[in-house]
Structure formats: C-alpha cells, structure tokens
Length: 252
Image 1 (cartoon, rainbow, N blue to C red):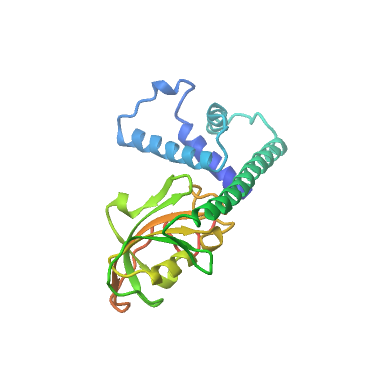
Image 2: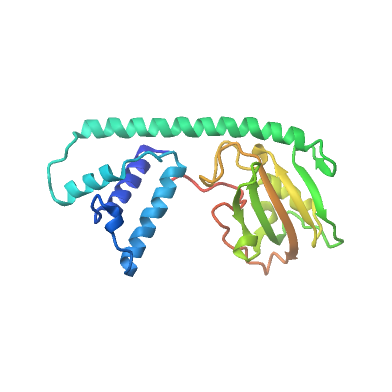
C-alpha cells in the first residue's frame, strides 16, 4: 500500500467525521445526506481495517479536519506527519506480510491433507477438484464464454464472493479467468457441479484483488457450469471485485 493511498484514505475519513463532535452518539442519521455520510464513513472504516489500519483514532482525525476547516494552526509539523504516516504504513505492510506467510503455510498444509481425501483428484498442475454432480453436457473450449454460478471461500470457510448470494449467474470467458478456473472449466460438462481447490500459484499468488483475500491464499470454489455461449453472441458481464478474473485489480 502506497503512502499517498493511506493519506488520501485518512483525509476522506476526516471529511466524513468533520461534522461530528466527540459525542458521536448525538449524530442524527435521518436525512439522505446524513445516511450517505454515515455509509461513506462506514465503508472507509471497513476498508482501512482490512488493510491493517484498525487502530486509527477517529477523534484525532476529526480534530485534524476541524482545525483545517476552522483555519487554525496545525498542531503537528509536516515532518512529524510524514514520519507518522511512514510508521503507520510500515506497520500495515508488516501485518500484510505476516498474513501472506501464514496463508501460504496454511494453504500448503490444507492441500496436502485435502489431496488424500476420497473423491479429490489432483492434476499435474496442482489443481484439486471434486465432482459434486455429474452431467453429460458438452465441455467448454478455451475460446468459449460460459455461464456459471459460483461461491468462493478461503480454506477457513469464509465466503469472499458468491454469485449464488447475489442471485445471478455470471458470464465469463474461459481463457479470461485465473489459471485454476481455466483448467477446471475445461474438465467440466454443462450441468455439472465441481468443487475446485486452487493453489495460490493458480489463483492470485502474491497479489490479491481484494482485502478479503490474503496474498498467497488457496481458494475453494463451488462451481456450477450452467451453459456455453456462442462467442460471437455472448456478452461477458463485468465481474464482481472478487470474481476470478485473470488479473487482480491494480492497487490505487
């Protein structure tokens, strides 16, 4: 995470808190503006917490924006602020690095044990899959666009994305998803349900498309192949932020 990203996030949180005094319980959430303001603060707070910024002092943030809006002298020198941002960034990076190491270690252990289970097949690439429901439909080719329902989980069972929960299947190009999906989809027949256990190197590796997915995570997908579309007629949908696109979204 870059320092300017942290600074911008803190500034936005400050703007959200600017109209609040220390007694936040007195803030009303009645008008659309008040509700939207609360929603912005809530989403930013969740985002910062996911990136390791869960110990920010909201009152200090509010004080900073209050001083700026009131055109008061700032209470800390620029050099002190730069030093503080650097320390906060370093701590966040250390936390993320630790989470990445833990995910890598836990993932290797999980795949080793999972591969021994009855019904689980391990391919040459390291992909593991389990046939949940068999069918006799056609198999997709790399050039096809497929319609699928899926639910993605971490190995601890935490769901990070689900077209099932959204209640809407999604169209995706077979060749435009993560390697574990590219391989897994071509094993399936239309109408089948698979459970895919995807090693980090066949998913997002050391990068991640979302704070919900730690770097180097093994991903588990419940995947149902609903149909194959004619590439000339298919219009792949824009996937959700955590959907299995070939490349993770770039950091801002």
